[in-house]
Image 1 (cartoon, rainbow over the protein chains, first blue to last red):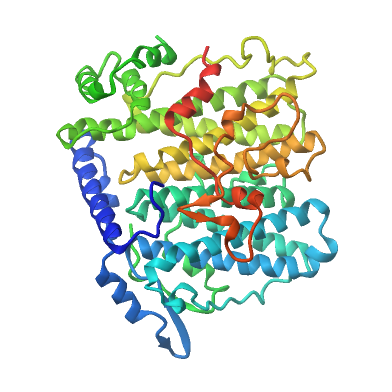
Image 2: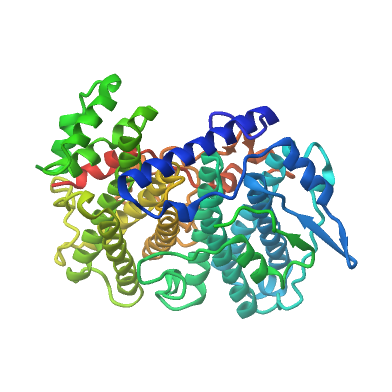
Length: 258
Length: 275
C-alpha cells in the first residue's frame, strides 16, 4: 500500500477511474490476443462516487416490517462492507465460543490455544474494517458501526461437536466469500488486502478441520474440487447461507455481480 | 536451456529497454517464446498502451508461468516424497497424498490454461548441494528435511500467489488463482502443524497453522529466513493493528494478515532447487 485507505474521496474516484480504464484495456487486449471469455467478467461494479455514497446513505437501515436493513451499497465499498459484515459475524461467534462451556471446561490445551488465537484474529479483522471504512462513511457512526444482530441459538457452545462443526462452516464460508469477492473488486490495493485476510481464514479452516476430522479433512474433497480449486461463492450465495445467523436484513442488491 | 539460465540471460536487460525487449520476444514467440515470457517476470509490467497486445499477453502468461513453475516444484517434491518410503504411514502419509493430489491437479490446470505458452517443467534438485538427502529412507534426517521443505514450499506458495493477484486482476484467471491460493494456505497450515507435532511443539506460538511475526520453530533444519521476511507487519493500509480496540499483541496482529512476495522474491526462494 502506497497510501492508506483514509484518502480523500477525490483520490478514491481517481483510483477507481483508472481501475475502470485498466479493466477495459485488459478486456480489449485479452480479446485481441487470446479471444478468451473475458466478457464473462465484465464489470457491473462501478467506481465509488459521491452520488453512490449518498444513495447508500438514504437507503441505509430502513425499517422493513420491523427488521433493520443494512444496505451494503455498490462497488468496491459495498464489497468491503460485505466483508466487514462477515468479520463481525465471525468475531461475535468466537466471542461465544470462548465464553462457552466447551472452551472453558473441556477443550484440550491445543484447542484452547487455537480458538483463542482465531478469536483475536477475527476481532482484529473486524476492528480493522471498522477503521478503514470510517472515512468512507462521512463520519456517521451508525453506518460504521451498524448494530448487526446475530442469532447463534442453533449452536450449543457447551458441545465440542457443535462448536467445531459451526466453526469449520464459518471459516470455509469466509474462504469461499473472499474468493468470490476478490474478482468483483476494482481496486487492486483492496484485492491484495482481501488476499492477505483470506489465506488466514484458510489457515483457520485447515487447522479446525485437522483438529476435528480425518487425516485428509484439512483440505478435504468436500472443499477442494478435482481441479484442486477451493470454494468460491458470490456475496448473494454467502449471505443467503449465513442468513440463519444474521438477524439483521442485509441488502446486497447493489453489489457488483458476475 | 533451463529456466535459470534464461533468467540469467535476461538479468542484465536495461529496464528502460525492457518493453522493447518484450516486444521483440513477443514477435519471436514460438521456438523459445514461452521461456522468454517467464524470463520477463522479474521486470514488471510497466508497458504503455501502445503495447496493448504485449501487455495482455505478458499480463497473464508471466504470473501463470511463475505459478506453474512453483506447482511443478511442489508436485515433483510430493510425488518423490510419496515414492521414498520416508513419510511415516498414518497422518503424515495421508497428508502428503492429499497435498500431492492437489499440486498435480494445479499443474494440470495451469498447463491446460497456458497451452503452448506453458513453461517447460524444470529439473529439480532437493539436495541443496548435498546438504539434504530427503528421499533417502536410510537417512535418519530425511523426514525432518521433508517437513522443512514442505513448510517452505507451502508458505512460499501462499505468498507468491498473493503477490500475483493484482497482475491477474480483470482477467478470467484471477478467480482460479485465488482458489488455488487458499488451497495452498490450507496445505501450509497442515504441514506446519504436522511439523510441530513431530517435535511435540503443538503449543508453541511458532508451530501453529498461522505465521507469527517472521518467526518459525527453532528446530533443524530451519526454513530459509527469506520465506518469512516481511511477514511481521502489524500495520495494514496505514492502520496500526496493535492499537485497535483495546489493543492487540504484535504476534496476533501479524498472524491476522499474510504478506505477499514479488515474483523476483519467489524465484529467489525457488532457485536453489533448480538443477
